[in-house]
Length: 562
Image (cartoon, rainbow, N blue to C red; front, side, top):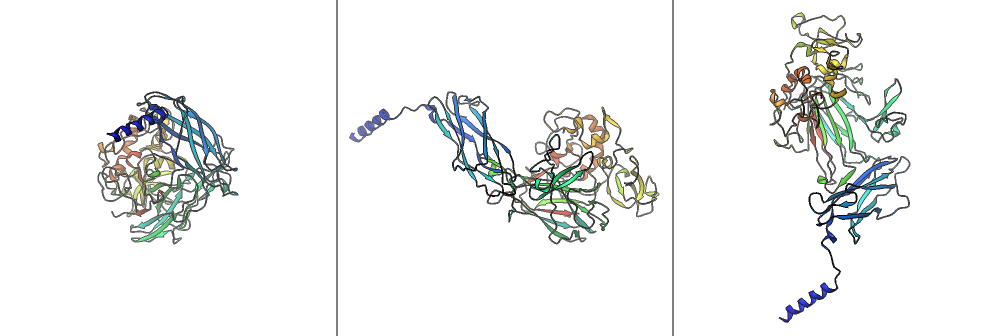
């Protein structure tokens, strides 16, 4: 009894001499806060809008004040400028409940390592605020701002293996895409973020390439095309194989490389019959794409997020995106598969899957690479001098067939004609109108108006006016470009929500464009058939290493056998 009395007495003394704490004294906490930030290489004034998500568990609102973002390891040469603070609650966070939250945003500007200065050390910052009548301080966890060096990161390169299972030789073609520059050309208006003046305006791993001469000279940054390990682009028939290493630079940006690859055929020093990129039997020149018709594997390789938040899954949301496209026609069959990624199975079939695969991987359909087009207008044949006009194969001497050939020297509107020739692949309606926008012979009436002033070519290209909006997008109206639930018209494509449901239907597109695509999608359900075919054709993959960096490698197969 004496012991119990003593405990009660001590408890009473503690209560008497302890400060009175209200329920609200420790009821605010951070729901989201940054954990790491990297300033891009060469940044002159990179802007960040840092998010701090505050949650209030108190039964009353709290006033927020005295926002501060300060370095815990101050430096006399600090390249970070604090520009201001904003809140979504007017600095009064509501009481506990669904509205008891507030976003505090801190705007900062950072300078990065330059060509002449690669010695900026990481800086640790901490954000704090005060709340309530007693001005209680709430502080975030410290987070580090580091500065990209622009140097090659050894051991993080992506390895691509290229296999040729075709019965004929294939020349590997690699065509890089344009990328943002460090310092866009200030003479462009509006400012073109991919523009450059010299190579030093581009991130390491990319270079400045001229893309326009008139009315003014314009240059863009393009990723540098890596070369095969053997430096030989020819893959022999049946068992040709080579590897390509895509290097990773410490640039402080998401993208490692973006572009596409294609199989080129019958290449000589003068060029190739299909997939030509003006590179002959060697490399495609930087910034040079493939001549349509061509089937292509496209990909964007991502590395690590420049900003990581406490709620970022695995500390890295960067995933590669890749696809196989026949938007520009069909030549060498092609598939692309991660070699160290885990397929998401039937519930997530577009995670680390294989577009262009010959075998079905339910619920994705198989890509037979055997097509039955609506007419021989979709057959592509090689152009010859003094060609023989035709309407059917019976007008041609075997093994030549009747199809559309392309004569670049002909006048606009007459470049594509139906002649006898060697079979090269298949046209798409989009490829015909892209190669000769003035072509106006049925079924490819490229100049015919179909939606106000917009033409059949605009409808196929999904690039002009209302037609530049996808019918899958939120808020789409019925003048948008392209939407079809492929599973309802015979293609083996997963149903929503694995794929995306249409948000609008454009009857003009359904009547005029969809019939030109159905033969492609039913024969090869995993490939892109038109610019907004994202829902059933985009694949993603992420394979994180111990440093939480995406390190997925891939195999690209020409004439896949599985």
